[in-house]
Image (cartoon, rainbow, N blue to C red; front, side):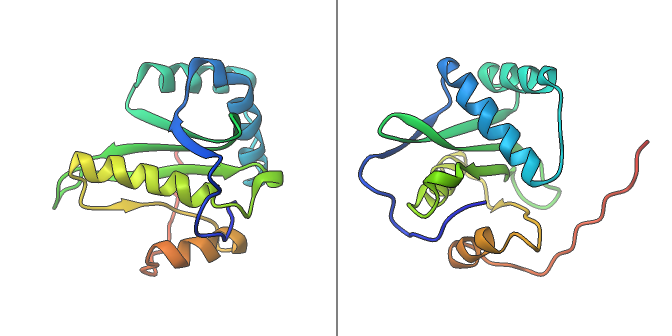
Length: 155
């Protein structure tokens, strides 16, 4: 769900999500979840937003064009058995109208900066094999190591 351009335009800023971003964040989050064929009730978005605002183990950044929120990312740090804590970039989404201008890469780079500052030995993420547009960017900025994910039904 990203774009291909390497350098974001000068009017793009990436910074932490702010309390006033809720409506735009919720709109982008819902679009992200629709892409992955998921729907959540409004209460889920409200709970997640509260966690993001409280710094409850999850973090988020906003990509803004001319001050308007056009992209989001969520990430967290998790312990690793063999190394220090690693950084998992869980969600990344750019509004369809803003794609192709480097917002996704700018969001990834901001997360990478935080991960480096924290001493994380690795930053990683997942995407669906059919997400060709995002994979073009990911293949340029990261390495695919061939892992396949399995989900065990818990319910």
